[in-house]
Figure (cartoon, one colour):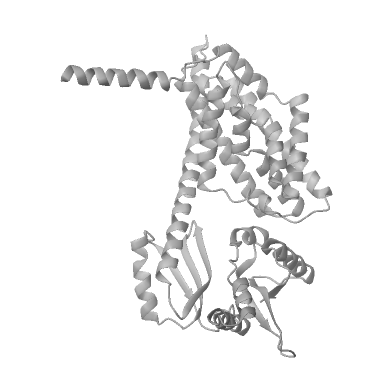
Length: 444
């Protein structure tokens, strides 16, 4: 019995080692290093290819074309210097690290400058959804960058080159954040610039880390120096670089993971605990900052007693929301964020939903039931001074006729005054975003 178990274990071990052996079809180590070194340089054709790719990606972001953005990422050579840095860290090649870092910095600055010039000159100045998506990193961006980097360096060490490298270029999306940073500079929006550079930094760091890990796993030759003092000095520099690179990335990854978990738990908490017949949550905001976590809710309808809210607040721990502050605003004077127009719209909506005898009313009810997309992240990026917003499909009853009309109503509250031009731009953007012909914008 023992022999049979040992035999099964040996067969399983051989099967796994053969199937998952990264040394199979591995290219000559010197050829791999030479190829990565060559792609690290940003001179001549590589530099012009980068500039052309940046223009293409900027146009794709400007006109909200996913296909154009993908095309730009396919021809982008930005992966080269990042993999060069990872290879240098893995082989103790300090000169390659310096070369990769220098070229990455040059490529980054040229990319931002190129996209800034484009967005200064283009007549289209609105931020589209593809562009806004490059300003708010998520947990998935970390995973994509890390696993994409692993796939990229594994493919780069093979004899037969495949379509993996272009796929990695698309998945990790190094170029769009740089274009978004240029848009932030051209439009004077610091939030865009910082958010985009944050995403770009995450992608760069985790691609470099994954390259370093695979190089060490494949046991590439570590560079040694005749001068032992110099070798120790280089080793100290490399250890410092690895530490400086990895520690912030661990912290960033932790913050992103923690924020994602908090927002998911907060959504579940609100949807399950604030389910009342005569009270409705019309606006919810989840705040995750270094100062703490907060769930901010705006309610309309029957005003919940303080005892009820306290009882709900005690259930925060059941949703792993310890040390989370719950703010509930309700009543007609809740910071003047609910007006009679909203309440009238809510009442009319309920009336029309219950009346199924009239076909015209049924049609309006169907329009009212059309879900409103969640644009909180986009509004936060577009209007940093925006305090709160609510959006409804409502029925408008004209007083001079019996006719009614359905429209989308958006109520926003800013911390600062809004100009007439900005109001018009916001209304046109909302109409385009919600894909509606009729929209009423109320600014408080």
